[in-house]
Image 1 (spheres, helix red, strand yellow):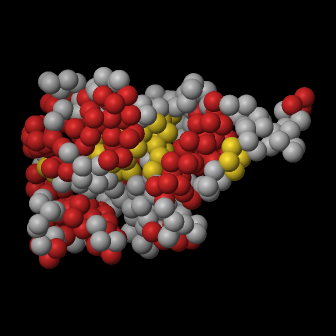
Image 2 (image 1 turned 90 degrees about the vertical axis):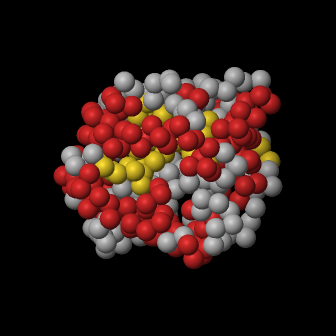
Image 3 (image 1 turned 90 degrees about the horizontal axis):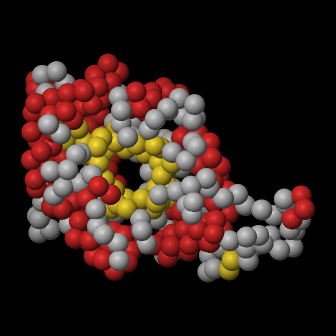
Length: 361
């Protein structure tokens, strides 16, 4: 099997009454720790209207890490494009790419939180169509020259009336990485057609940490299909898979932490299941599509989707998971709230220093 890399992905989700300053401070510490431990890349999510998932701008959050993260690539996980403007995305991401000296991956999606869609006025719109128009305009801005003159169904971009080339007015900056930073998309549905379309454009997938293994496995054939359409060679090294993991020094300590009533893992999946059930998407947590909704309990979800235990147990379960879904290049450790500060850090340390060497032995 090829060497498996270790990365980090966090939405993140915190207790609803936790001090926002503490949440942000611990989220930053997790990224800095991941960098110290040799994680190869790390992604932060964003939502504007969620008290628990309270990084409201992943680009702004990553900018706070510019001087602290020394080796690791950083990525948006993801920019929810229908809620944005193409000129803002193009200019701000170009600046972030320069701040990070090109150690940046651009993660994009149509967005999944319906309250975000409502507050930005696109709840009833075709957000997939908006997503495609916006990223196409961003790429056109980066590939083109002022005054741009891009006209779309949802946005138009032009500086024709105010362009002053001699002083640089009307110019939108280009990213350091040319023609653009690597683009990744999150795959959050079984047999995702979006994975095929992304691969055909040279983009790579991240399979979400809340999908059953059978649905994760369904992404690879879709990726191959898209690569073949574009004449790309499909490489397992380009497939990232996120997974909820907790490592402790003993199996008992890990089990007690993950299964506690106030566990960050139960908090995370309770929140996600509540939202997905309301949106009619509870099947993401099913092992078979004909499984009755009432069988999808919180205990069932956590038992199926959280890998926990001592380093030996977790390594064995990750290898079993890889055998089930197929080879992939990067395992993204899914960050959760540090209910217990020391145990939260210890899990990441054990993951990097004890689990990964066993996996790659």
